[in-house]
Image (cartoon, rainbow, N blue to C red):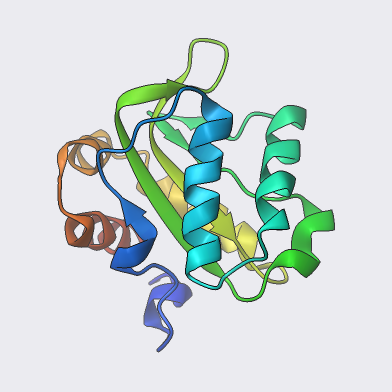
Length: 154
């Protein structure tokens, strides 16, 4: 079943919300990068970024296979204007703790219970190592969107 977000008129991920070749000194700077993309896209209030960092302090959002999915906790819901994603690619990787390096960081802002569908689809998409390697290696934001859409529609 195709991921509902990518069928909506108002796509949840635009090229402007994808950063390729990004660099960050730590996971909090990586979270700021995807958070700023969400702010710039009008998805969240700026204070949502702090909520994403608080959530990260409680529990790492690293899900394996070089992917992290930072998002705010339930108390951050009122800071979300509309659901959306932001993606930053870190070719050198970012330490997300316990020796886990994230090369793709996907910031999530979801209204209501949509975050559960988003998280499960991202996790399923990113199980495919070939897809993840392509996400890490491409220099084209359109390719990142295409790879995620393909994975979400499996």
